[in-house]
Length: 445
Image (cartoon, rainbow, N blue to C red; front, side):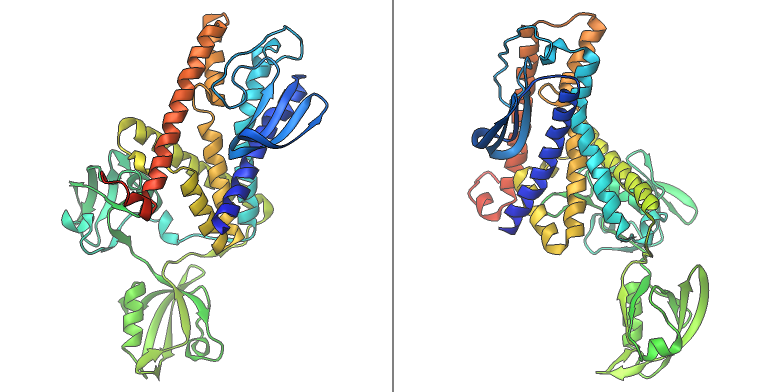
């Protein structure tokens, strides 16, 4: 039930904002709007105000704004249109005005993504520091793709599939869409560069590419218990542990070393506010293990409390990163580098919405922002039936310096409708194969 309610909330807001963009700009330019509907199919609730009928329809997977004199504006394959030549008809407007009406929906979704993430990030944000650091391997997961091809801790990954890699974040963005696709990886080892072929494993039911390489994760103090050994010695929340007793340690090594040292003095080498310092801490024996009274986070990640202006800048940066990933996924699908199995439909979105809602409102709204951005960009693709397709047809008419006949437009829109239906069938099939009991009913799987 949580998943269903979260899904209806997320999709309802995104569809409303999208269609509101079309509606407002259409009315601004004096176009008569016949119907504003959330959802497709039979109308469950409807009311009329002026020339417009407002409705909530039975199939909550989209919505539409039907304008006078518009072809296929009700989300169906019926492209019949009666043009009377009235000034308030859609086709009576200039191409520039029609372009603004078409582009308004996707732009509203993109703006919504920016606004939501601004308020989410304004609440405070933290990000693992390693994401912005060079992709030098700290550890190799057992039986992983990296172990099979001989990658080693200390190797620096500098190029994957022809793309230069400067950070762990870039590495994840390049590898994630390429599960089960052989890649050329360039590494630096002992000052020399070499190229290794590796096929990322598919992880999770969404088949995300994974090499099995782990960054060097420095333990960071998330909690220092009042009155216990760590606080008495001067350790503070946010301190990053670099070494114990002069030996560099990562998160797991820190835990093992400390547990094996009851009733001993351990020298902590930490980083605080950019400064490195040594602090001796006396451990106590607690159930046979060394204890100093701290809790850790496995990845260094300073928390920031941005101003509202900084939150806007961070939101723009995050949405730009997401946009890059979306376009890379589209390009990967076109080139055959990305599996269509990574695409997600309404069932997958509902599941993610429920999971996010169970975590926190921040997680739910972050997911909403990402889906809104996806929706905005997807609708700008030059596929007839989508807003970008209508814009593309108008651009072709501009190049040809004449309007296409209604018959030509009808054929183009029908081709787009078929393409959208094929895409919907693909993502819904993907969704169903991720449901365990349904997959068992598919003997070809």
